[in-house]
Amino acid sequence: MIFQFNQNERHMKKPSLALSLFPVLLLVFLLIVNVIIFKDDASYGPNQVALLVTGFVCGIIGYFKLGVKFVQIEEGIVNAITSSLSAMTILIVVGALIGSWILSGTVPAMIFYGLKLINPAIFLPIATIICAIVSLATGSSWSTTGTIGIALIGIGQTLGLNMGMVAGAIISGAYFGDKMSPLSDTTNLAPAMAGTDLFTHIRHMVYTSGPALIISLIIFSIISLFGSGNTINLSEIDEIKSILDANFNLSFTTLIPPLVVLVMIRKKVPSLPAITIGIFAGLLVAIISQGELIQKMSSDVSVKGYYTIITKVLYEGFSIESGHKVIDKLLNRGGMSGMLTTVWLIFSAMIFGGCLEATGMLHKIAESILKLVSGTASLIGATLGSCLVLNATASDQYLAIVVPGRMFKKAYDDYGLAPQNLSRALEDAGTVTSVLIPWNSGGAYNSSVLGVSTLTYAPYCFFNILSPIISLFLGVMNWTIVKKIEESQEN
Image (cartoon, rainbow, N blue to C red; front, side):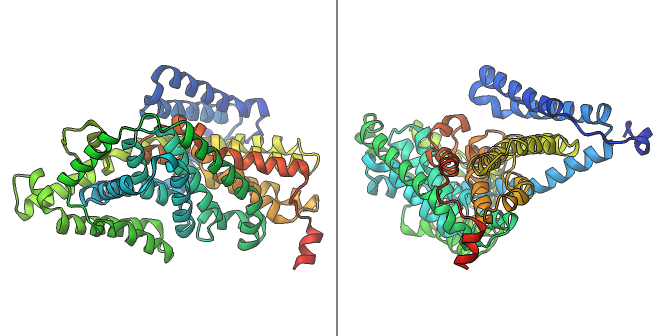
């Protein structure tokens, strides 16, 4: 605490917009340099360093230039990290979940049966629809991509499809279901911030989310029919199925763990205990169904041997040498340690976001956007833009909903607009664009779980890209914009 010698004498100054943008622009510059130099490895250390460096620069500017007390900066960092602890905890637990579900044969079974049932010619739109249904039922895009998404990635990989396209289809469906589900935390958060009720909010989102999903399905169908089926090797698919069948005891029993998780989440059990129960369900199925596999993995068939293998799978991930490169790459994954790089990324992002907020720079950026508002279209555009900026700077989709929601609520009221216009805009940009940013918790999580870098899948997340565009278009055209008078008449 070497900076605390004159803490009580300091008076905080308001930052200028240029000063506020400096750490953000420095971060963007460093991230671009990292992508150029390190390419797909940028998120495995270089981006974390960039976030920490820019967070340090932001804190130095705040202390020496703006007179912010060091204890305030420290509190901002702690608060930001605290807000992300739930996401980081879930990440670590999901790592264990993936390992246990591979050991239990759950993921191999999904891949095996999926290869039998799914037509490669329409795989991408089918994957989108499946994820949309599951996410709608559970209210969680993260749980969907971390469970069903893993299996679909595996199927797509064995079909020889572009992994960016497959991940884009999975994420598009998962985030549609998340937005439209009354069980989703962001779907409940947005109307709470805007001052409207949940189901009014969901009905109003149909006008943007519906067209975005339909257009996405059309694009994925065109890609599947004309652009992705040429590389499929049917003989290799048969070989993969044979190897999976030879190494795992595949049956519908192995599908019990995901069904247990879906039931838990459907009953509104919080994600963390639901996923934890899924881990124990996977381990139980592994002990019952995959005894022969576990014995092959360990020369010790005693209780100690079983305990050793199970523990290693949970913290280190599953490992197998099948002799087939695709299967080994597909199944040698999971474990809590495999998620630590992503946790480190989120932790670093929260340090940067906490510094930016504590110094007042984050508020100044958002305030400057509000000054550009001159009508309904620009107000909606400013809301969407603020959500995008916050997702890129604060690296958290919840902040991207809460901060603009608080800031723009009075403006919507002043313009005579019903609050569901605000809540829709918050979700159209705040929720869905988080997954497109590598250092955002949404992008970091999905990249880690699906095993596809954010920059690889982002161009194919058509639903996530189209949602804010359609929202802005409707605002410009003044279509589906509800006035407060109309709302009172409907009620």
